[in-house]
Image (cartoon, rainbow, N blue to C red):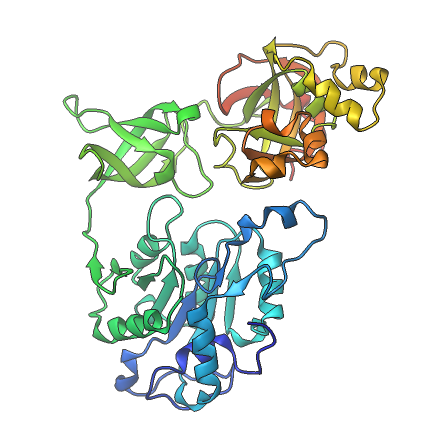
Amino acid sequence: MVGLTSIPLALILAGLVSGFSPMPPKTHQQPTTSALRSIPSLIVFDLDNTVWTPELYQLRKLQRQKDALPVAGKDVELFPGAQRVIESIQSSPEKWGNTQFAVASRTKSASWAKDLLDQFDLADFFHHVEIFPGDKKTHFENLREKSGVPYEEMLFFDDSRDGRYGNCVPVSKMGVLSVHCPGGIHEEEIFHNGMKRFAEWGKEPNTVVEWDGSVTVLPENERFQGVVKKVVTDRGFGFIRYGGRKTKDLFFHFNDLPANQEVNEGDSISFVVTNEKRNGKQKAEDITIESLSQGKQDSADTVNMRVFSMNLPFAALLANEYKTLETRNGTMFVPYEEGTKMLLHVGRRTYPDGDRHIDVMQSGGLSDAEISKLKSLPKGFGRGMAVAIVELGKTYETTLEERCDTNFQRSVGAFGADSGKMVTEIKRVEYLKSPTRVSGRGGVFKADVDRSAIPEGWLEE
């Protein structure tokens, strides 16, 4: 819904609850009676798939258009429930008061989100706006400081419950009552039920209001200390050594690591032990990285960096800035946020594509001599070496139709049918000052390289 009148979304949502005094935006007053303690002092909303749909990362065509912005009401819409709440409160805004409202969003498309708030005429209506990728707990630490409201007087709505990208569970552990709404605020009853559960709540931490309206109080699990024994990067899991000699190594999945973080063998971590719902086997969850292993730290002469391997000719096409999209069918780059820097390693083989990349490059008007140059590495750079440093952009999933777009194919250096469905943008690339011999491995791995080989400016950013 676009172009709403001057009634804020925060006030609109709140206005469905009776017993409030009218209060203009941005002039919050702390409650003065104990009766108001049944009403949250701060209500926080996630945005993507909670207040509006779709999630911004799904707007892949727009992401590939320079300076494009999603249009409210066309590309992104408020959920019907939120819209009906807005229309309802427009006729009775006097029912709300003594509560602050906030946004807490982990979207990587922060500029889009803020622009959409403007388009929906909602930006000035929230008392606090926290929009940046990372850990949702950081959002709430900021909100507590800015609002002066303790966690137990907050109510939070989010579509993601638990796991690596879950929000409700970790925020509930801070003492905030969290409402899980996996289908977004698609009906007013979701908000009503959250308010009702808050009024009934005994302020116990680890409390989540489930999608069906029931309440779960999560157990206070014992935390264990351990060391990462093995990491299987290309398959997204590993094992932890902990306890005594008779304690079996414990399985963990990358989905249970902190968002945008990774572990290496030898890292010290803390965790809780739970059982897999699928097979009943034990695994680690709620993992916290306590300290990095010795030997993985940067030194004055070397730097420990992530590395990925590609075979010729595509490694050269990427290093020579022709190839600006890397596609894979696996999710190798998914855990790494935009701006991550990695080294490009050249594999020992030549990728057998039947020279179809030449047809793609010729379709863009390149001559045979230009193609030959783009497929070549500088003198002294070759197979089995790290040759360049790369900054990753966004990673997203594509359809075959999208991959068959002519410009897309030229950016990949392959026809759509030959390309993987997971696409990673290459924001920039630069050759190393000198090549570094590295033993190649599958997936993303780490290697120590001479600091002097890294071009200026890449390590300081």
